Image (cartoon, rainbow, N blue to C red; front, side):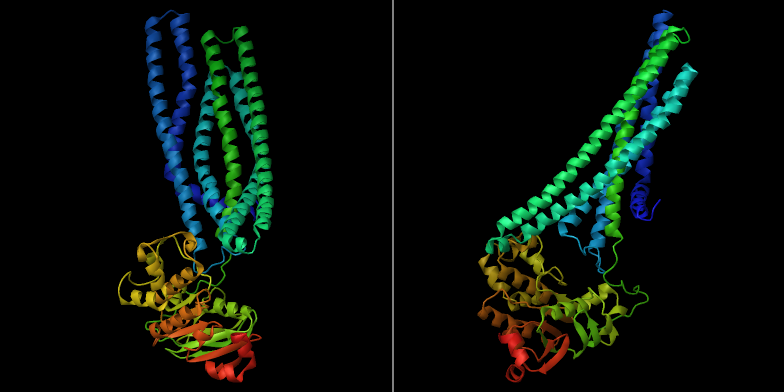
Length: 570
């Protein structure tokens, strides 16, 4: 077993182990069902020998009664065995989906890096379903093996040559079926990768539909999706051909094997080595064996697809963390009361080089970045989506890396410029991170962000439904609601990144005053180039070339610093 195979097989094993009770119950009942199925030809043969050959009517009725009881038992076991197997399948898929979502949303990040959202959605749905189906395949596989074993034992009792033929031929047939599943496994993995890519591109294009229409790029977007979708179609057709080829060859091999069993049984009956009832039993058992052998073909296909999907799930679950998880709650530093002193000490990350910045508790500081990359790097470090290459970021004298991520993000909230809204009501979005859904803090956040104007234009006010990612609102409305959500969280330290780029100048000035009033006495960092927002700060820091190039009041820097004027007024 290669190291690359191990994570996927571990995912499979964990999925099965978590549902071992249902798998065991389903397998046990499936064994009972297959045993009953295998005994039906035997009972029919006995009934023929006793009732037809020997003329014993009482014996015939007795064995027909036994046959009826067996039918009731195998029907019962099939019904409840299938239910247990299906329950194991859907529950295992649910557990995997939950685990995948937990990993993607983990504070440490890293799972979504390099993957489009649609790709992750495909992994969490179709791949999880295929891995969950492996539990059902195991139930069916155990039941089919039982049917083959019982059939072989019966044939051994009827005729040693027939029994040996089944016992020796079945493992060879199963080995050939396993070899035939390898191409399907490879092509299934490619199929899932291409399908996930197509899903991701489609989601990406739908999310940017307004922008694409605005710049007249619809044809280019359609051409891009056509290429990706074509690749997915090609991979799907190749996987379908592999599955059809496997099923066809397996059916041919199975038919040849069963024909051989019937041929040998017929010759034995012709020589008088076995009786009429035993011949009927042998032929009926040969026909019965079609079922278990066909089920093995299906089981191998499910296992092949399950292994491919498990490898993709393992890639997501095993993705490296973007930042270290931080110490356990029992060992890490604890911020009992957050004063809000924020300090950057020799911070180097990406384009940033040895940035020193000290922000006092309750201070409102503006940060202007001549290069947007500097602002992005600063935000990643403050939000601990990345750790500094050198230096440190401290909150109240404690390095962020010494704090648990959950505690840190309660104390220090970074509100990104492109933050999405969620499906629900407007109030749900505003209070998503707030301590309460009502009261003065929420009302103040709605007013300070200009969201009250949005509320007045909507039919149901704060109870108005918002579609996924807020697409039912305009860009300016979405931005104001996202700002209200950040303000309503009432974090001790708040970092806002360009919170008013999609509103008019009058609204921008109102938002600037609102932020100043709502955040009075609490530490606030405004990463922006908006003169209106910078005018309400206590001081402004200019980042140029990855370093602190200037610091002072907004009016002073506009008057004295050419680089600042270019960054803010150009």
